[in-house]
Amino acid sequence: MPISRKRFSFSKNKKSVKKSFKVKKNTRKYKKTTPRRKNRKSGKRFRFFGGNGDEDKCAICFLPLSDNTNGEIFETNCKHNFHRGCIEEACAYQANRQEICTCPLCRSELNPNPNTNSNRRRSTPVELPENSYRVEFFRTDGENNRVPVRVQDIPTREKANIIVFLVTEFEDLDSYNIRFNGEDEDNPYGYIVLGDNPYNVIVREGDIDLEYVTDNNIRSLRITRM
Picture 1: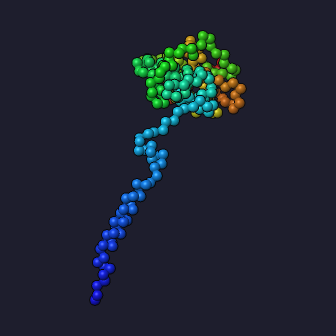
Picture 2 (picture 1 turned 120 degrees about the vertical axis):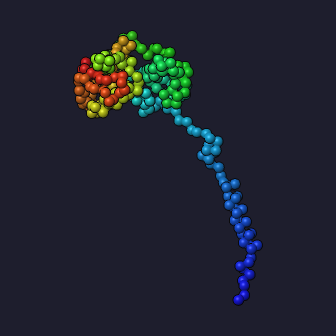
Picture 3 (picture 1 turned 120 degrees about the horizontal axis):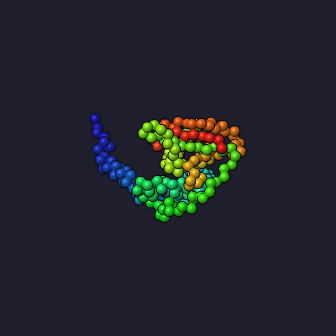
């Protein structure tokens, strides 16, 4: 039986293999480098900063920045925006713990320190509109007695937890109805302000247990119509 010469044509096979390998090697060499690929190679990362639009919210109290209940907008050196009252309180809390004042979002050191600006405090209480409620806060001592707590002395994180709880507890109540920033330096209360009450929110007066809402600091609150 004659043997076909094609079975032993190694030279052609080698050329084809070499040629195909060469094509594979060069395909990536001339591949277009996109901006995304450049960023990945150089290790760059895009950073997004908060704006000051009406729809943006303060990351501390969760109220819209356009709502000046907690003070005007304060822009940090890291380009994040908060209510002045909220960021001052956050820095005061850090100062009490002997910590450097940092941005709540990116942890950059704040310079200048907003806590040095004390013009947020008012000498006279703000007149609240009709249909408002006073909120008193209490903790318990070693003998399980209730002790009043000023709203100014409640940590920001616990205030946020209480606000979320009240919004869930009372139907149609919104966070902008709740003012826990301390209307005056000597006024220890928080407030729920309904105003015209377009959604007919019903707020229940009396004592509310906060045992599972906050940490060990605030144990209960009392709501009284003004």
